[in-house]
Amino acid sequence: MSNESAPKYYVDEDGERVEIPEPDPGAQKRGLHGALVNPNNSEDAKQHAREVLKEKFDEDYKPPTQKERLEAERSKDPNNINRGLLAALHNDRVHTDTKVEISERLIKSGAVDMEEHEEKGIVL
Image 1 (spheres, rainbow, N blue to C red):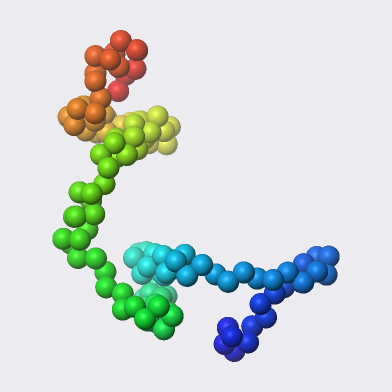
Image 2 (spheres, rainbow, N blue to C red):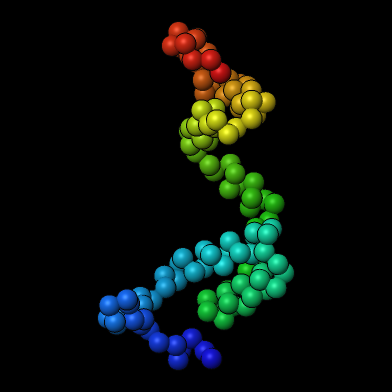
């Protein structure tokens, strides 16, 4: 049975007919790309995602090259990275050894002024 013949509505608990909105193509595409890079997905699931990308979006998925991954990494905003690292320092679930590594990284990058933190009584 194809999706074309599936009803475009459902009946809610009050017996009212509720129209099902069309799925967002951008969200579908992002989800399919995510399925392809998720190491927890089976090869069958990845193959299905490739087929849907080809049929619905006329796209042959190619994983990013190492060069593309490095360029994407370099284009990340350093301030956002530092904010994430600082947040990790305040997260109780982050291991102490990891917090030490993060602190050293923040100090080395100059993102943290140690004198200012010591004056405020903040220990990294």
